[in-house]
Image (cartoon, rainbow, N blue to C red; front, side, top):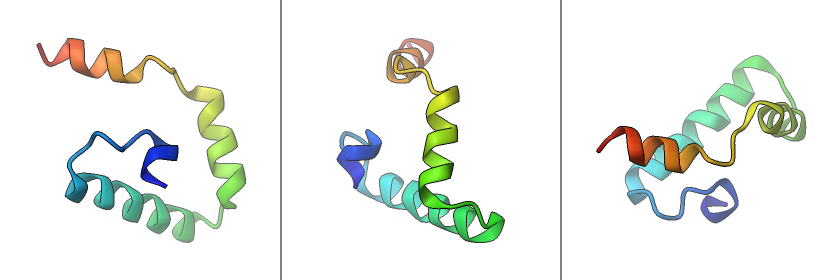
Length: 57
């Protein structure tokens, strides 16, 4: 799952926390898993990694 979400290069503890928080969010708001990620992809920029790494330099 970490690779599918693009988290494979993150620290394992951080990646686990992100996955757990996503699961908690989905449980709290009663949004289906597929609906959540479909809506997320509508707002998602594939260049997010470049933006994060260039802004931290």
